[in-house]
Each structure stands twice: as C-alpha cells, then as structure tokens.
Image (tube, rainbow, N blue to C red; front, side):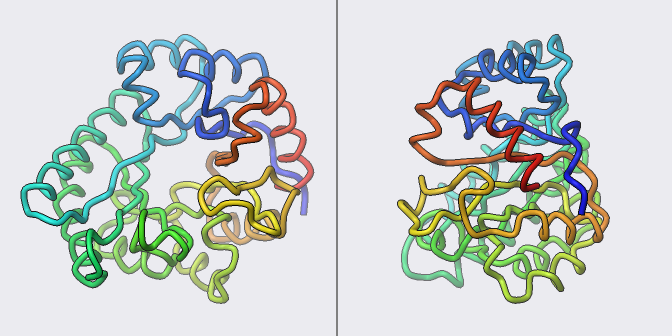
Length: 272
C-alpha cells in the first residue's frame, strides 16, 4: 500500500500541548501541514474570534473540534449543564468552520455503567438536532476499555455505531482512533459497517511496555499498531478525509514543536 498524501495530515493540538493556538497555527505553516484539529480549552484561551482569524489568515483547514460529550453526571441539573456546554461546543465548531465535533462520551459518576450509557444515548439525542441545524456532524469516538472508569463508557466501535445509526450519516458518525480500536477482534467488520459514518481518523502508536494509561501514546512507528493496515480499512470503507496525529506523551510535549512536526511528517510517510 502506498504512503498517504501529506495533504491529508492534520496536527491535533494535543500533540504539541505546550503551544497555544497562534503557535500551533504558525508551526503548521512553517511545516506545511495543511490541517489543524483544535481543542476547546486552547480556543478559549486565545478567544474564539482570534482563533478563527488565525486559522483563516494562515490558510489552514480545521479537521475537527475536540471535544464535546461527557454526558453522564450524578444529577439531572449537572447533566443539563453538560448539555448546555455541548451546545456551546457546537456553536464554536460552526464558528471555526470545523465540520465535526468530536464526542468523548463520558464515564459513570458511580458504579452504574448502564445508566451512564443511557445518559450518553439521551445526550446525543438532545444534541443531534441542534448540531444538524448548525451544519455540524457529531463524531462519536470510542475509547479503549481502560478508559471506561474515567473518560468514556463507549469503548468499542460497535457501541459507537449502535448510537450513531439512529441518525443519518451526515448528522452523527464515528471517529476511528487507532490507539483506541487496534486491539478489537471485530475491527475489520465494524469499520466496513461504519462506511460513510467515519468522520475522522486519528493516528499514534501503542508503546510496549505502555508507560502510562493517559500519557503513554507513541509516535507512529514506535509501537505495535498496524497503522497502515487500519488506514486501508477506513479508506476501503470510503473515508478519504484528513488524518489527525494525536499524541498524549510528556516527552513529546516537552520536545520543541518544530522538531515534533518534522518527525510527525516523516513517520506519517513511513507508517501511515
């Protein structure tokens, strides 16, 4: 399989966590990276209109805004407040010309994982019409099962698709992040099932031994994931959009950003 075109590469802001929006945009321009995936807290620090202007003036495209979701909470009032925040996230995505709002769906506030999954379902049902009216697609991102207790009760691509298939594909889809799904024995079948519901493809690598549950992602090629093989699956299913490099790793975060982007592009060509 041929290496992937660099015209599809996107810098997810988490890969250069210490950069603000302006620094990340300027870094993308220097490295000729055409896409950027923005995080809401970074946008809030810079200001929504300032972030929009920086991206527009640089000629970059926004592959996604992260994140919405986190629907479960212990009380109805808390769940309502989280839904309000999700509506704000949709508005921000629309303002930034990001077609996709990534949903990290949230964990159970207690031991009742069944109720948490129901709250996720109800939250998406409330949010989807609002997003549709503003031209934003919701992208449900299943997380690796090790995150079920603290970040998401949606832990397989099959679960994410069960939720998404209640809506048209242009309204609710899924995000395929290799770090979260590579282990799944049903991955090939579920990616084929996803088809045009795939709204994002994220890459990093699984380091062995894994140094940290949250901060242990590796640069592509440093671990055990068949990234190119999974890319072939998502492309066969019909996805041809941007490919985000999203890496949570303190060593990478403390490496100068321009060095990170240069390595990111090299590894992308070699392994994606």
